[in-house]
Image 1 (cartoon, rainbow, N blue to C red):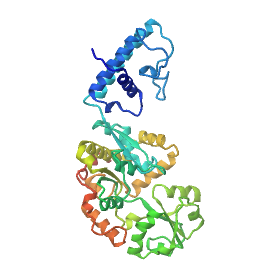
Image 2: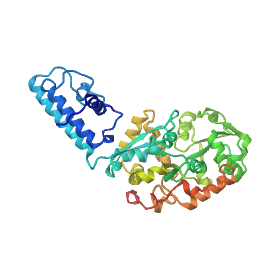
Image 3: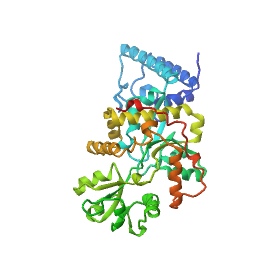
Image 4: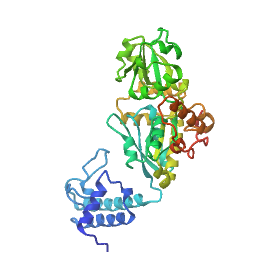
Length: 414
């Protein structure tokens, strides 16, 4: 007979019902003892089920929780008690078996860099259609936002992987001796775009230099605009801060505004009533990869199979999201971010395809997620010349090609 001190039983019962303690995190022995303890409790309480809600064990479930699962409540008849007791015995045994089974999926937390949106679609796709689960991962997408710093959580070991921006972040990490490694590039092109009013003479990239002002955020001004100054002779004095409000741009036909190719142009069309000219900075030589998947070196060392599953699952997810049935993924996106409209989703997906953000260039032969040493070196040299990145960084430490460039998913593209 298994005997366990009352505090230990209570502690494990609490663990069984707490949402923030995954059953998979408990050791096999703990689950066996916990199951026995719950069996014993069910047998001892009036020969069957506990009455009412006691705050411990399975009896603490409400009549119906937010997932619609039936709970236990009220006073049971003797027959009902026996039937309920059997259900508890079966449920706890099944729970212990499932949690310790060889095929249980491992939890893998991926933090994004903003609120849920189609630009994250490939990841939501593989959650929705079971691609991650098929290779052994229970992926939880933890969305970012204005008050969330998921990259800090990555460095602290609180999440398994993070959605990076462009490669400047990764180069900076190497410079600071932070062991962050980019394992795939979801976007072949940085989605940053410069917008102008039509019929104002700003119909070419070179002509943008004649604009009266450039409405740019700090990151854009400190990165690609510095490159534009060095490479093309743009004027730093014309920069005015971007407040994430398109009204100043709409009101000034001789201005240029930054944006994400999938987002700000949509807002301008709706609020300004015109279709802006779009200049994707990537198409003019700002050749960084973007929306990267980055992990800590320790994760690669300790959980290489999980990294492989996540990267390969994400690659497949992007093919299925762009070229297959993405309805379930979009439902998940809208569940996480209710402000994301159907119209915005359709616009974003169209722009991702039209401008080859995810699938273009090297991906046509190497597959989505592709990266090359030559492209990394090209971008780094441009950033050094522009004074954006320091010289002497060992950029090879910022990424690995071990998980990409294998042509995975090419068969999923129509």
